[in-house]
Figure 1 (cartoon, rainbow over the protein chains, first blue to last red):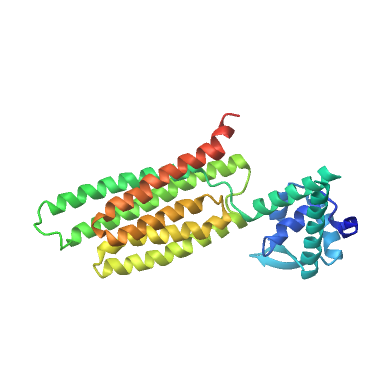
Figure 2 (cartoon, one colour):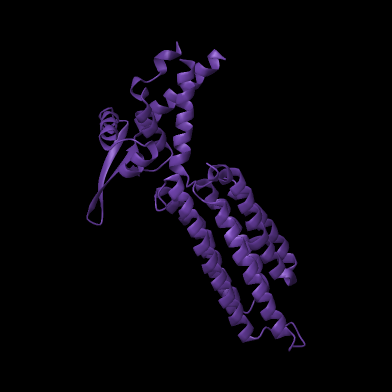
Length: 97
Length: 208
């Protein structure tokens, strides 16, 4: 059954969105993710934390002038897991057609 | 279950596009840039005929004419840049996307890199008094810039780039028609592109 390949962690709109944005970008900051996904600070932060705890994304803290700038990048494990999740989604849709 | 998965895939696709492309480039920017180019070409043509009516030979380009054409060219470039920027600023406000973001900066860098190299080459051509290659070089490097940038904005702009390349190549072998090719590429093609993009993406939204 394909259903086992679907990753529970990606079974949420915001987390799916974060992974999608990170997969096509070399690294994005918090503000950018917030704008693209149209979510609140708290909501985004909690989902980023979940993904970070699962080691699907990595966090890099830096500075732009004096302001802190946190960049998020997808890890190799995260990329692999997300691609598996995508394939599973596509497969399930194909099987139903 | 099926709907939910399909929805998820659509959402992934939309976020990937939105986060990697600057989609607020306005068609009106293309039209404005095209009009600037046409006006510039008209003025340039006046200057050329003015100078060459006094000269019996076309082989020699006087310094005054060269300087006049350089100034016209720079003014057209600045005017086109400012008007194009204003229309895109307006659209980005309407779309509620920031004009200075990761996506717009990446678009600018990828478009301006080939164009900057082209500008350096054109400067050298002018210094060497090789004016015949200036117009085709403008078209060729602008076309390359557009194609390179098309990965980071509405991808239709690559067709504008291919057309500029085609004109530039033809112009290499018909150098005496430089101003005509230039006007066709920077004037007419910009306006056509602008009208097509505006009616495809913006006309509907304006009525709301």
